[in-house]
Length: 244
Image (cartoon, one colour):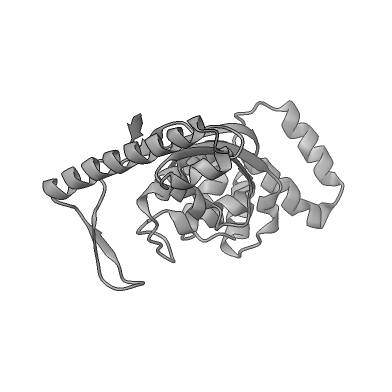
């Protein structure tokens, strides 16, 4: 049995840059001339800074919410997280998902248990919840109960598999804190929509209050995206983290 309090997010493939935004935006006004721009940029070094007018165009598109130029790129992430996080991920119908299947392979005994820094106490009403730190006793209780029930559930799962029960039936006893893995592919516009809802930031025009575990994934995805498209990320931040 393995117990973790973290998530894994790796950028495994990408075709995404700030210049992709510029080409797709300018085709509206200059048509095939954007092909020449693309060829010149390909010949230039990867580290070439954008001109001031390029940065201004990206900011204009973000500010005025011209969204389609941010769609002409692609990022694929590999994610390991507890299954309850994936259920929240797949509420966002703006990405392609392919998840590990408990029908076709035996799931590994890896389970999520909240870390000591996880806020535990929920107060308020729907739409007005606040979370506060738990006591040492509450943390100890959660740690003990999650480990106990996860261990018992996995033992029941193994007993059924050993008895010849199909994997798709035996998995029914497994709890939502068991880890799964998936690939998720999206473009920058979809990622900005995801980040606007799944990160809590005081500088957001429309504050969100995500569950901490999916926010952990979102923070890692944002860090990878920021390296790929720094100007687009900066415009997203400076315009209130609103998806265009």
